[in-house]
Image (cartoon, rainbow, N blue to C red; front, side, top):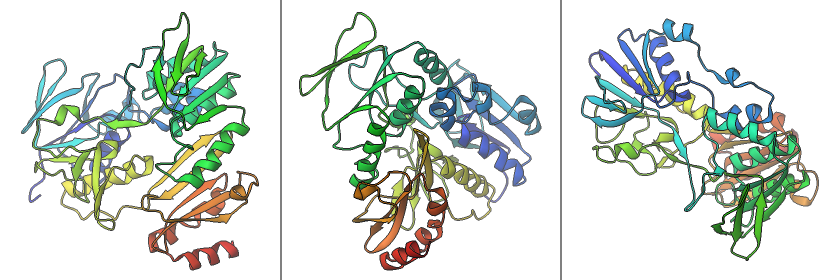
Length: 402
């Protein structure tokens, strides 16, 4: 922009929203800032919800990303518990009917937990702080749990449940967990980890229907088997929280489509980031919705720079992690397009311990991603090699020397 905007309004008071506010101030913006959020809570961190909060290691207050004093220091007007329901040109309308005008809008509304057809209220989901508090309370009272979905959220919930002494049954429609996102090899290791920790994991069988239960929850699978438990959770991922934008000029297709700096297509005054956005990946030449914590932070800095007319830094190699049954699972890079998987460290794929196994994902003989099970020291070494697109032979040579 040739001149600095007078008022920037950030929609979404989570990680992406508050980090954008902070980045704008750090990069010299002195105009008016507003932050709108659908929840009444101060901005908080979501990854600990299914990890430390659910397990009981943290109290909810520890997830806060900012306190009242820090918000005052940022000189930001807050509208918490009042979600935006409409964006129209230079104004937004809140759920209470209030209207706010601004020069620039940054959308960081994140995602919403995906639900299944006919899912009863007793089958809960985990997305918000209130969800985590409620589920933790129920885990302390239950003896059995039924979890639909063996993805990261489902498995972290299972891990917390086992820690609370709860017997867990997991239902996964795919042949192995993570088959679609991380591949069969990672899925095989994940399945072993889950089962070795006492979870009854049933893969390759789809849900037929939820059934009435006098108490607790119950469902029937396509093979005719029926399962019951004291509590139930559906953990099958999330969808971008963008339904309220379908009547705007923005291109909304599995997230708000943006250029490589987060500027949304279809409106000159809108940027988007985090789970709600699909940024252009100039290397892959496609739009990617990157639902990772570190990507959201780097995108927030890029959005702030782009708005203020500063060249943003290049986006780092994507990274995410999951804590499961005392093991940290890490992944660097994008696994989409993988045509070969190589075991770089450990013996997990050969029947040895899951812990210590590191897998390299290759496409056209180039390293595009690494997945590690309880091997953070090894995993970190490959980030630069992913960025450089190291060949398979070079990567194997690096592994041999580690």
